[in-house]
Image 1 (cartoon, rainbow, N blue to C red):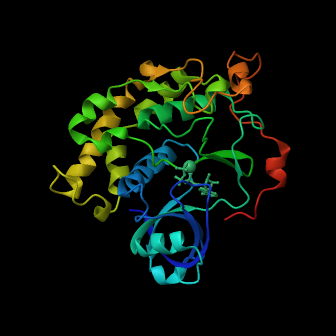
Image 2 (cartoon, helix red, strand yellow):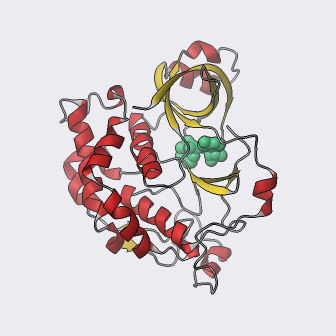
Length: 294
Ligand SMILES: Nc1ncnc2c1ncn2[C@@H]1O[C@H](COP(=O)(O)OP(=O)(O)OP(=O)(O)O)[C@@H](O)[C@H]1O
Ligand SMILES: [Mg+2]
């Protein structure tokens, strides 16, 4: 179960997010990035955030804490933007919150160096969950207190949009050519050897249990929330053992939806000393501009 809090103040929308997430304060005095059940992307995005975010954290990757947030849309009455008002109205009840990382910077592969070991772990994890949203176009990583953090796992597990075809879909390869960490020579074999044994049925049962029942209700073909949770476990369990053999790392796609920049294509050739730094080396700016902690 995720911790449940209640929103006490709507602070501001985060306009760079396609789903218009907002910053809210809650009754535990925490500040959260709130993802709304009423957003056009639908509840499955939130289910994916919980399953994959919790899984990533349990595998030792940095993912900000997730909570559920009770929302009374009345807290947004002073918000002048009509779109935000409507989103809040459509999202009364339980929503998703991610711990807000104050002072974090968007991950920039030109400004931050990631070691091959860590790049391997992130690429392997994204392959496991079939994350199509960690590309150089949209990294969905933040740098906070000098470390890279993974956010936004809403566009993962494509198979949950078509359960009858889930097994076939989960057997497909993962193309990591446009992954934002592809230029860092990800050591996928080592990551797979380290992480795959941790992805057990028990762990997956635990992370799917964190999804609130009401986000799982009413899925065609499933009578109970637990049956649907089970359906989430299976493809991930099946993928864990062998997905490393099906990770495609080629030249970045040139034309979809825009041309890969020169720095990326230029950097894809292996670099001599980017190998054995398990810790990331960051630009000093990240340390200097960090916020005041949680
Ligand atoms: N935990 C966080 N702490 C600080 N800032 C955050 C956090 N989560 C998200 N943000 C900021 O909000 C932006 C949007 O968040 P996110 O990517 O999760 O939303 P989204 O609607 O799923 O976006 P999209 O689908 O367009 O990638 C991020 O790019 C980042 O700038
Ligand atoms: Mg995003």
